[in-house]
Length: 414
Image 1 (cartoon, rainbow, N blue to C red):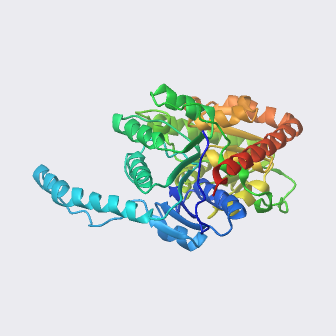
Image 2: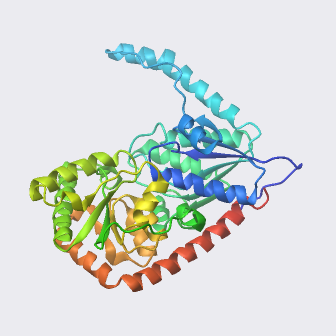
Image 3: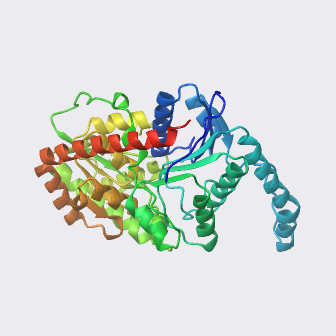
């Protein structure tokens, strides 16, 4: 599906982005930075705004105009009875939401295009509100009312558990002038729940378009030992199961402790990496279990210096030899830096990425954690490191070229 954007009179184009940005998630933030880079390269005079969940943070870091996805008009009261809740919905909730619709209509005045760039917004796993499907639907409708082009670029999809979630996603996509998905698994998932994709294309995750100049070089080694970057995260169970069990998370941590013991015994150092601030809870729990097994003997071999930005995380991965990661964009960062990587898959996006990169045998299902199998995968990655790096390098360059083609399609006519 192409875009027919009429240039009209010569003027500064107004481009609006929508998403879960200004957040503590490094993958989301680098996604926006990447597409902003390509926009500014092609349309340096464009006026840019972002409709996001963390407008204050994003305005400070990116120096662009920001608008909240859904502003708080009246603080929630402490209504304890059903009747009190009903009154709140009728006399406060409904009028407030009408104001938010008007906010969206006003914010998109004179906008030329609303772009939903990457990330996994097409899901109701964590609710309909905030950055969920309802607000995506609302802003999509506002864009069309404003005669503004609506573009979905390399977005991820699924799961969708509820009827309303499917309706809002289907409706928003149906209004789009251009749609593409970051993997065939997302496209196939939408088709499986009855959402038509009409031959929509599949393009790589936008972060593969991160300029090479923004990638760090390998830093100085602290010792002669090889370093394994181990990325942990709290179990995002609802991304793979409607009713997730905490047992999965406990097995995840226990097997990674066993795996780390094996690494330390073979003279590897282990660097803990995170993909967003909330991952610190998983890292701390992991360290506690590891210490209970090893005592203080291996503490100096566990490198734990939490990153506070995507740039810091990239530098940490660059200083490592091999990566074992759970969070999706930690895997993408490893591939960008040409590191052999084992993905612990909690969502079809992880398995799809590894398959697309020619690495399906290095994907480990979080719901079936097995330290023995993980060790075998690691040994295979070490043994085949040179071949894997060559293949990863080719795949990353191919992804860059393909994404450049997509940007030409999106911005042509603007």
